[in-house]
Length: 79
Image (cartoon, rainbow, N blue to C red):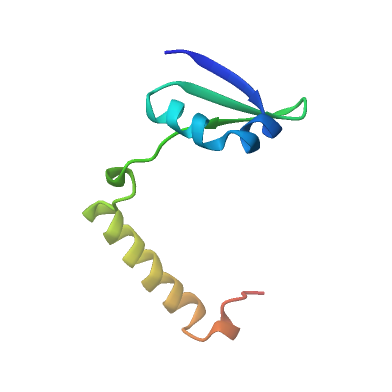
């Protein structure tokens, strides 16, 4: 795997090429200034699916929030 470091300007100018490189497994690092950097990583459809266990945790959290804060938006801010 090849590591490619580019500036944010280079990324903006040639986005398609860098997306294609990331799709092929290349590690693309986008530098923004001297202190910030980002890695371009493809996400696949199975990365976006919620497992049944996570779905249960989400539903439980929603129910707990309803009990504690109520269902009206104005009550969502707890003092």
